[in-house]
Each structure stands twice: as C-alpha cells, then as structure tokens.
Length: 448
Image (tube, rainbow, N blue to C red):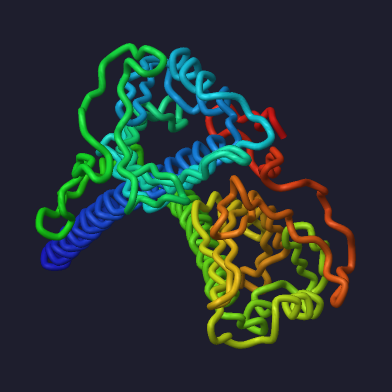
C-alpha cells in the first residue's frame, strides 16, 4: 500500500509538473503571439498613415489646379506654415489663406495645373508626425498670354490631429519656371523675393537661385541603401490577452490589410490600362473592363458594355503599334477609396497627354479620370472609365495661343449615350466632380 501511495504521489507530482510546464509553454506562446500581433498592427498602421498622407498631398494638388483656396487652407494645421519659392514664410492658417487668395481667383482663361508625384513619405515612430518629399510638374498661364511650365520639389511636414493627417509645413523649392515657347534652355529663371509680393511673416528659410542656378532642396532622409534607417515602428501594447480577443483583432487586421491590397491592385490595374492604351493594344485595354463596363473620354459620349468599349477604341486608329506615332498618356496622382466590403471602389487619376505623328501636328494636354471599379470573382476590373479634359492644345503654340476644344462624339463610331456631363475645357474654368470629400474637413469641395 505504501508503495502504491508513493507511486501515486510521484505520478501526481509528475502530472502537475507536466501541466505546469504546458501552461508555461502556452503562456510563452501567447506572449510571443501578442508581440507579433502588436508589431503587425503597428506596421499596418504606418502603411495606412502613408496612404492617408499621400491622399492629403494629392488632394492639395487637385485643389491648387482649380484655385480652391479655402479648401487648401483647411488641409493645414492651425499653426501650419507655407513657403513657396523665395517669397518667405506665412505662418498660421489665416495667413496661408491670405497668401493663396492673393494669387488670384478661379476664372475662365487661367490654367494652373500642379501635379503631385514621386512621393517619399516617412512617419515618425510615435505615428503622430511625418515628412514627405514630392515633385510637382507645373503648367500655368492665361489664355492668349504666356504658357508657363516648370517644376519644383516639396519638402513638407505633417501632423496627425485627432486621427486626421494635416499639413503642418509646406515648402516648395522651385527648380525651373519657364516660358513654354522660349524654353528653359534659352531663358534663365530666377527665384522670387519677399519684397516683390505680399509681405511674409518670416524671411525665406533658404536663399537660392532657380535654373540655371544650382541648388538641391534638402532631403529629409538619408540614402536608404548606404545609410539604412533603423526600424521606426512603435509597437502598440493594447493587445488582448484572451484567445477570442486575439482572434477578433487578427480578423480586423486581415480586413485592413486586404483593403490596402485592394488599393494597390486598383492602381496597378489603371497603370496597366495606360501602358496598353499608349501602344494601341485595344484588345488588352477592353479586357480590363467588366462585362457591363463603360468608357467615356472627353465629350465623345458613353460606350456601354465590354464589346462597345472595344469598338470605341477603333476611333483612334487600327490596333497595333503605329510607326511614327506618339500616343503617350501618363497616369499619376491617384486617390483611391475602396468600399468597406471590398467589392467596389472609386479612384481619381491625372493624365498627361502627348499625341502626334512624326512630320505632322503634335498635341499636348491634360485631364482627370474619375473611375469606378468592381471586384469580379476576386479580380478587380474597370466598371466606368470617365476622362475629363482639362486642357488640350497645339504642341507648338501651347495652351495659351493654341487651345483646342474637348473632342466630341465620333460620327463613324457613334456612342451609345450622350456625355454624362457637358463642359468646356481650357480656356474655360471647370471643376471635375470629386468622388471624395476634403480629407480634413469631411466636406465636399465648394466649387463643384
């Protein structure tokens, strides 16, 4: 009996030790899962922050195009600053708006396109501030006045307030600003000075010359290869300790990650459209559309259904690469919003157009896409493709002296329906409808 009792005690002790070790192992695994989950959530949050900052800056560019000055001022923090070229620093939202209003009001005969492209955005470890570098391609000028084009570099700062990203410092370093007809290779451009314009609150933070002067706008980041940055993701700590809570958080993270993946897939889809379109690959273009999709380019009317989309493309010429033709349609500045269920989406893109034939006429232009997309059996497709012409002009005369009307319906391949919106491109003023509201105020642009 004593031997049995001893054996039973040893067995109980061994069992308790086993259970204790198993519980300790489970606790260790849970701790590891909590840490990994917290890191994944922080990394996903940083990607969402970068996306939101890109939407903020791209919206700024679309608003600049149409001189929507109050809407631009709303994108700034109350203490935000603005510095354009050598004109000095304007401090506070009220002064930012004063400067913007001084630039002039939206009218017919004024082109003011400021394309935002090539972003490099870095978010701080705490996720509350960020910096971003952007390139701007600029087309400005008045009807029957000089056609001016140029480019600048933005080195901006951003701040998250109550979960919303805003511009806290906007600084545009001008590189070149030149008359289109004379060209940057013939005419030097000089930076502006504060005393020539509305007096600023502070002098310029940097004095420099534009082209042909040499000045590199300071970088907010180091070379990512020769001086790689340390991991700057702040790990969140409020991770559930129970399995059910962990499952709920994993499901929520999976949904958020899926929506970011949808955004990338839609941008890829639209960029592929641009590559096919440039090379006259009409079958490939049409294949990107849903069966009930539609296309509406400029004022040409609406072609409904994939087959009619394909037929409509013949108005530009026969399928296949054409010798001696330029048919470039560059796409950039996307603002993409995916529905909560991940089955539909809207996007705004900008297009820069260069068309012409060697030894013949050339055309330069720009426009805005406002498109809809649908996910069909897990694959994103174009539902409605609508390109609004901003300006179209004779390449040699420029938009000031040689503007062309937005193209109308084809007589050889008539559309299925009239244009959904009747408008006139430059020199007329027209704001293409936005599918989304101001990312800071949540209100629609007032000038629609």
